[in-house]
Image (cartoon, rainbow, N blue to C red; front, side, top):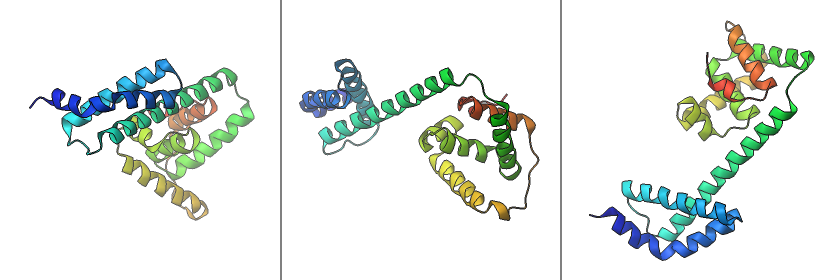
Length: 189
């Protein structure tokens, strides 16, 4: 069976509407064309590996919308990181001491992975999907770790278990926060 031929017959009637929808989302001819191409590519890959949807038009529109949302999130994260890197090239000792003491407190009570996932999600604003991809785990693992960490933080005064503090990790996490560089949490060296 010729997958490309079947795909063409499903998709061709909806190409004009998909192009218009891409322009509606992006408000830019250049970005609309890129989004249009990415949507077709992603939908082709999907149709090759799975059963097609009954409403192909709706599926194509959903693919375009999800791709555009992902692109907007990436742009937002990049611009936020660029602004912070330009404005925060240094920090005061008092700020560093506060951050460092908070990180030490966390490291005495939680495992390394819990702290890194918690910081990526709550401090740096990563989505659970991005954290799972970057840390090489599943999204349900990230949800579970965040849930357990939040529950333990709520009971912080009841915690009596302390862990050995790892100075290198505390330093790395503190610098990641002070310099607003989440990628420092994802690299171990």
